[in-house]
Length: 278
Image 1 (tube, rainbow, N blue to C red):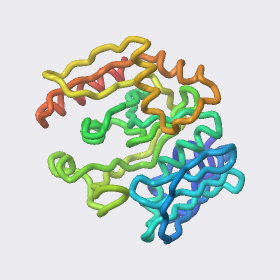
Image 2 (cartoon, rainbow, N blue to C red):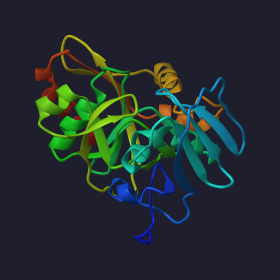
Image 3 (cartoon, rainbow, N blue to C red):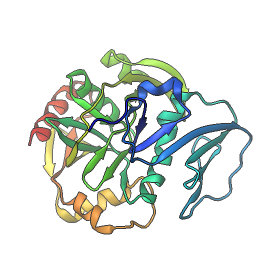
């Protein structure tokens, strides 16, 4: 059954309060938790952050904080300047989605993801690992991009992120895609609009990006898979069901290495597509 056309969301949440950015959202299921996004211009100096069973106070890396209320379904961003709807949806929604995922028994991983023939591969990479540029290169080839930097899962079911992928200036210029939206979050961004996705997608594996002498995909052992996912969890909170993370770590996983030169990006994208096809 198709969800009502007027319900929009991301990360498995029905999102309201951002009408000007509805095109960045996906069709939402009426059973998803509802979340109203708001912002308040105010000086903020948060000394501590916490997460309780129905409330959270989260610090923003760029300054300011988030007041999250599960019972009322609200997330208020308290910062020193006005936030537009597009900023609220991406990148500011991601940390909220991680905590909400925890509350609703889901898992979240700091990762992008792409889909090939309905098979989703999570793409994990540290800062400056080339994650966004690799996903953008895949998007140029018509590969479906599931999310930019936060992957939310209901067991193995994938809950799509906002329909945008943000690049830095050099990757955007070299790839010839993206439009500058100015500074959003901690940096200037060149935004790539993404298309829609199938309703039912399932995670099939993981790719961990790394630099190396040549493009290659190296299978990862079980213990290494778990350790790598643990450090990339979106919310560093005790899992409500540790078996879920173990199941996710049991999926095929590779470290995909490539030289730190732009000329290796095409071959890397080809490698990821082949892994996605299984």
